[in-house]
Image 1 (cartoon, helix red, strand yellow):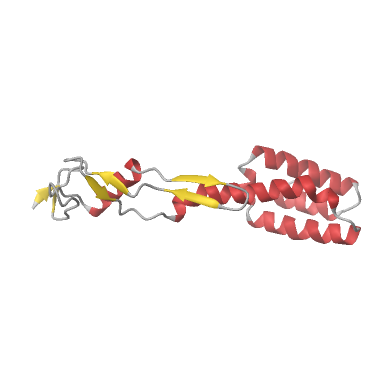
Image 2 (cartoon, one colour):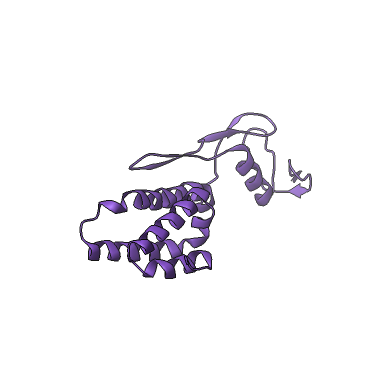
Length: 159
């Protein structure tokens, strides 16, 4: 038995085969999370997640295989950014739809989807400003349901 290299309490969980240092599972997980940053790259058609294959042992500095899996929290930023990018693109290109009926159906479908991500939408000031402006314009253009959606998002009616 040896002491955990982080909390210095007794531990039997060996993490390195070279120096035989030990760490509790929770201590080792915290060490991996802090020493191995997951990097996310976003392109138009893919999300690339990059993490190191190995890390250095905290005691002997020999390379060890990285055992930290990529989790949902590691990819949360990329997922949120992708959702926001889709909504911003919608708000910028919605004016290119041909018929009024098609346009109103598109409004309804996208705004319903946005309501399901309302907390995320409200975190982005640019998206909130675009949404408020677009809803006001929709209402002025005769789509009265825009007032209802404005109330659902922001708690107040347009007028």
